[in-house]
Length: 233
Image 1 (cartoon, rainbow, N blue to C red):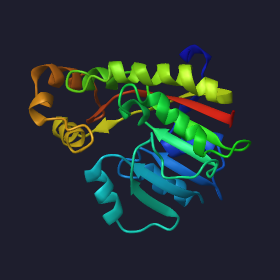
Image 2 (image 1 turned 30 degrees about the vertical axis):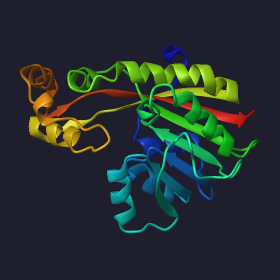
Image 3 (image 1 turned 90 degrees about the vertical axis):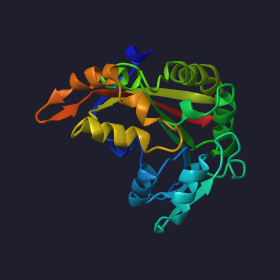
């Protein structure tokens, strides 16, 4: 499937969105929004955004953060969005579909189709590929092989059935860390996956991390797979 994707090159997440979509004036949902980084960037480009986050700790942090015009945070699940039928212009999943529980990813995609405006709405799903040099470093303490494969299977099985048009893209990012401790701090600072420090600080991970040494820091390649769907059936 990846061979059929159009390569967009090196882009940030919001850069990939800007290359494909004009979000100014649109009402969109950032499903599994995490700390709301992309949600805020979407607002900066003129969208009205509902950031939905299932993790109660992160959701509470989002609600307590300084307000941003056009941005609303709620605690909720992708499978049960607090929205009326055909009420929004776009739904985004940025690295979040594979965090939906196994067996419920199809329901999350069906829910996205439910809330989208029929003729003009779009679904944009970004998932990390299991290629590049970043994934092998993460895999010993956070092996997402099963859930990432499940997300791609759900897209092939359900999203293609729910939408008339599917467009496939690929872009790449280069995560950079000052040192090993910076990587440890980043991956253990996320409440939604509860990665323990002792599982990261191992000889295996240190050796894999050392392969990324470049220009005084540590740089890795992370390809992203972007699926864009239109015309919900």
